[in-house]
Length: 297
Image (cartoon, rainbow, N blue to C red):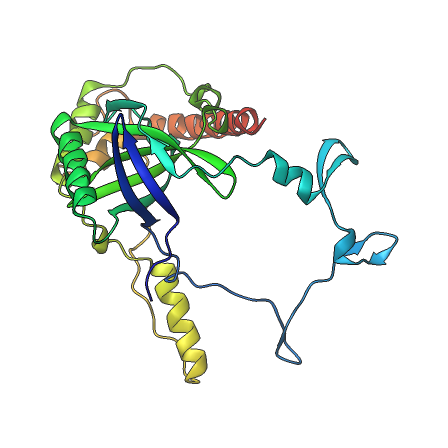
């Protein structure tokens, strides 16, 4: 089945106009979705719209409401909300170009493939010019798009033989990292600890191959479902052994990079290290809880 276009229109750069189609770059079909089932009858559970103290109500009586204070709402009809929707533009104007590493990853939301309209040689040529110019300049193009009445910032960059478009979050949708990391102490650690950690990073460095990472949970769920259908016990799914509790960071790093793990930390004995580690762990837990509360506020 052909992928349904998320958006169809034109990418515009000054007087250059490129007709394109935008399709999702991700799929959710590999994920397993569950329904709630009434076990005695085996039938799917449906939900009624119910108002406390009144009971089931007609769907025609439902409107949307924005809570301005506890239990108090501003009511809005679909028509009123529809009047606010942005007019569907059929073009993305490229208004700015930034370095590829200038956009913080936290702003990226959802990826899409951008394809040139078929049977249009001029469109294909302009598309290739834009792709190659972005690749050569190492820039990302920024613009805005309107889909289903809502606007989004988009970033367009080269991707293999084509172009990738990613929707971005607006600034007021992103929390500031300072509120989450405020309680992390500003302290210096021993240089040899950092060197050992670098050795470990370099030892495990390599190219990114996403196919090497398996969704063990989904695999186990599929096996459980198939086993139920076939009326047999599910097969065991291989999992990595759990990590052991680490008491001494220096020793753990040495063991990780394959060095002698018998020597002790030069700064403290193993007994005092255990007590110190326990105190630090307790303090870190308290700081994390405090940071989470502020970040959620």
